[in-house]
Length: 301
Image 1 (cartoon, rainbow, N blue to C red):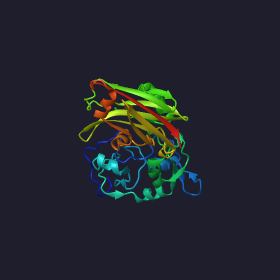
Image 2 (image 1 turned 30 degrees about the vertical axis):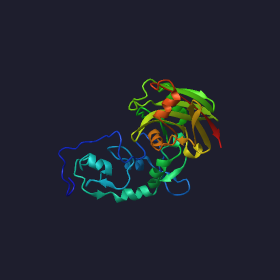
Image 3 (image 1 turned 135 degrees about the horizontal axis):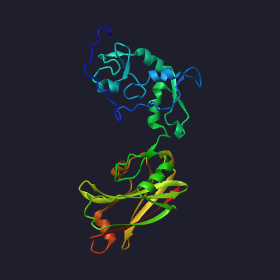
Image 4 (image 1 turned 45 degrees about the horizontal axis):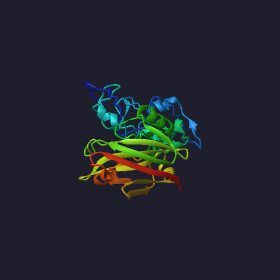
């Protein structure tokens, strides 16, 4: 037994599905680690890569890196999860920092974890995480509203996913004229989520339509999201129009990137917001059924 190290009676090796602090790289990650000895660096041995992997969650470790009295290392997230007991030798971890390993990490360079999606840049070990959080090649979240869909991927994959798994209507063209019907428009709690995808200028756009409560007022909202980065979305504009009986309500704006979540866009009211009473007026009849026609177009600036 190492001096000063108490033995833990019970050690729980935790293998969480997701950590609060996401780290990059796993045992299955084929990223090449390089030492910072020039523009392109030198490929390191697999041993260095293994030394930097946490034995519990198998992600790469970042400061503070902890070690037990016998020298076994552990990331700070997992130190709490295993109740301060070394999962390798079952000694109490204490508060020992592995400064030598932290120093070794400073000399390394790694490729972005999204290299298979198109990012070929190399980053110093401690800059890698910050880059990956905003990497333009990182996967997109599924833009489908009304369900907590956890699917991620690039744009072609998500387009196929929306069509095959969510049965979303796909249309070609930059103009549209959609009719939304709801038998009981007074049930705002049972919001009607509608999503249509348009192929326009060789890119994809998501048209959303739903009912929600804006404070105490029941409203409908329609807005457009661009399947791509915000910098590309700003190259386009769109207009929406709804009306009837000699009156019309219009909106013009810039589509938001699907990097912005559906709820974020909706709650910012960045779209055509229609009070329920006005929507029912446009629907005509006895106002007991929503029959709303939304038309619009997309153009390139």
